[in-house]
Image (cartoon, rainbow, N blue to C red; front, side, top):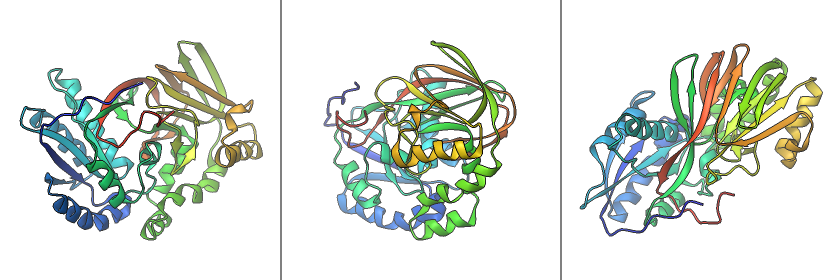
Length: 337
């Protein structure tokens, strides 16, 4: 189990990464209040606002290079946004370290202000931005957690993720949900997490079975009727649905869940067991792996999602493993199974 690093008296500085567009504008509404609370707390901070898709990654990468720890200041990246903003920040930090081994990853703090907020749920961080900020500012030392890493060989793409990467059913739902008017309307009344289940039935009728090859240190398996293939770093996806109940960000491993579909009714029942009772992994058509490394090769184009962001409809060929990232969060040793 990862232990907290020793506390230090080095003054803290928060590089605040704000994505005002997260949660279809919810972050933009919450940010003025958060800024006032930061000023009231009399902490050192500087604001960096995301201006276009992918900008947060660029900002986090540049800050990792320029704000390395020094005797008179510890810089913490404070992310204000949703799971997608956090995803971009992690990728900025990790890509900088990957390209320059002399760098150390900056710790990341997080105030959830998006739609699904699955990472916040996994670390028991309040969904209320003001309460979350209060807890984050009380933290005195970072803790290291697992994050996922993948290489998509077909598209020569390398990324990191805090939540999960899904191909098939959940990828289709995310692709449908993220651009929908329903999601924007639900976000306005702070019910954005319901957008995923709202689009469930449309995806249920459209998603067909597909083939996937799974290779782990336990051997190789081929599934011809896969419908959902999700590699996850913690229990949740889709705004709080428990896909892997015992997944941990402290075990050095990822959980892979493959759900097969032989009929529409059968798959609906399997998904209902997931949502209502978290007992889907006990069923014959559910397959669960806990592994440090896994290769997934798909036989046809399918929708994909990473940390709730659209990846597109492609033929994917993944290699997954585990990396580590320091987080400035109010974690306890008995949190995160």
